[in-house]
Length: 442
Image (cartoon, rainbow, N blue to C red; front, top):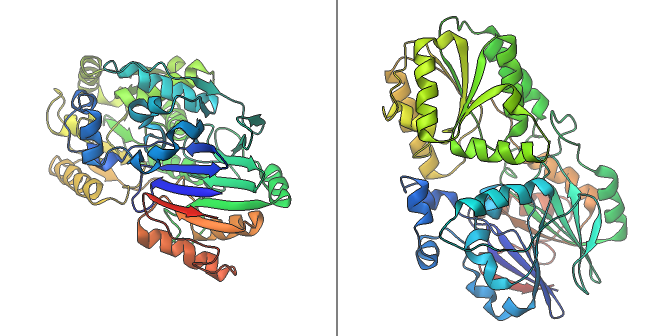
């Protein structure tokens, strides 16, 4: 077995890994590095970049390291729908001339991304498959997408069954025993695969340095309800921003709005994209209870309604990371004809992704909001990622022969390696700290 850690092994994002057995290769994930796009003003600029520019900016993984494997690739597998895992598909997948597998929701979101990219002909072979069922993709590989909880719908532990044993790729997951939308992690199946033998675990390490168990989404639901239902908001506008793909969180916000007897407005193109994909699959029905501003002119018109009667509405919008071009940033920069009033409520149902540019952008946004004398509520959130003690329990349950930490900077990956050492593994012998573009034979 040969592993190439193409991307995501030294940064948070740009995830891509290739596994080779015999003369067959499977690629897992094909994501972008979001911070590299944040300085671009809008999606039109982003879509206008050439492939060479995308490589040079570090937006997409440098897959030149597997150019000698190109003809051997039998499938691309996507674990869930976040852009740091699927965003590079539209740019580099076509060269591999193979099917692309994912859960139905992951593939539906990918279709929406491809539809938006009018500059490229993306006639890719997309194959949605049911979770928790094996699919034979080649002589050496059977694929199984094992259900796991995360901060979006139909996330999976990508599991490759091979003659060498199972390979598990856990980018991204948490062990949530009380999810508010969707199924619990499929623990029985994970234990079955563990008994059959897991040769390699490629494990995310984003919060492997945080000494806790990540709380359930049920906790975030109660946190949001506490703020929204107990804080004085009469005749004040309420704005809540969260991750566009976090359907469970959006559902909680909408339920609270109903109790407040406020009409829900959902503003932002990415919000609409993720929700529309979920509605196409009948996973949610938010349209029955909300009005959408899926493009700028519509958002502007809806915000005019809020200006006239702020106590009537609750706005869910993009901008949780203070992304340039997001609704909340455009509002504070007066690109919309909306003026924040004193004691308007702005809730960040998220944490800042730990990247320097994100941190700086959020600090700037919050500073401007404070100058407008709004009430700010931060970190009304629980993470969608496993923390240190979740990783300990998962490693103990799976008992992999080898471990490669992924999806983090080198400090976070080292923290996961240290945890593995506490569980009896030896760094350099059966735990390997890898960098982008490296290959290793196991």
